[in-house]
Length: 309
Ligand SMILES: Nc1ncnc2c1ncn2[C@@H]1O[C@H](COP(=O)(O)OP(=O)(O)OP(=O)(O)O)[C@@H](O)[C@H]1O
Ligand SMILES: [Mg+2]
Image 1 (cartoon, protein in one colour):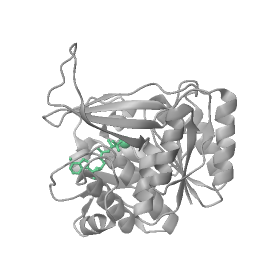
Image 2 (cartoon, protein in one colour):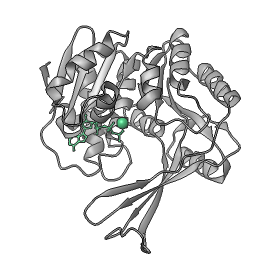
Image 3 (tube, protein in one colour):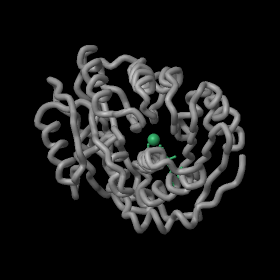
């Protein structure tokens, strides 16, 4: 079982317009609503790959009920904790030049007791050997140590924990330590205090320093430049042929979903790299936020190249 924890899920409202003009009335067209949140994307990818998963986290209000209905419609199992505030709605506006402007609400606040109850629920959902994915931002009220606490407790219970987060919660979570971390370029540079123009070639040293903290897999995703995968034994830079990117939103989440499935199935290094890359490329070459079709992922698997770093 893969347990996907999303502490601050959302209803994602995606709208299109020709031109976004700040300070003016902008009329939206083609508004569509999806169940959002990084763990939800991870669970969707796992389902495509045949991995059993369950989504958990906090939901509340009518938006929370709507989110659960949408998970059910997609056949995604869920077991959330209900909180007093309403689940947020995030607005994503796509203009005529394919530029995305995101307006994300903070989400409902949670108390220490609710965070403790969610940890208990996650612990109950995940058996020894199961994979737990902790991804996305924390809701107001959840302390910066929340992911460290979850990762430490679940690891001690024999679960394999993947953390996909940024900023201080990510930094603290490294101390647990999780089994897998998947920062993107921006998140890794932020962690290392490095400037944004740092060449990719300079990043392996920083990734290896994370392995030294007891983490077993460090996966650095770099958008169109592919991804680097590090374990204690192997390190590769994986790339794919240039693609026409339709939607890079959630490409990292698809990669995490594939890594979770690979861990759960017991894949070796190269098989894991290939599946993770293919899943992310499938996401990039699929319109909208829905997960890619299995046939597309399988097609990409054959086209992944790896070289040692
Ligand atoms: N434009 C692109 N062209 C080709 N592959 C891409 C592109 N964007 C993303 N990818 C693939 O998806 C992977 C993850 O992308 P990225 O590094 O953007 O993740 P991310 O920023 O964590 O995404 P998110 O958090 O929105 O899910 C990359 O390592 C790469 O394999
Ligand atoms: Mg990401």
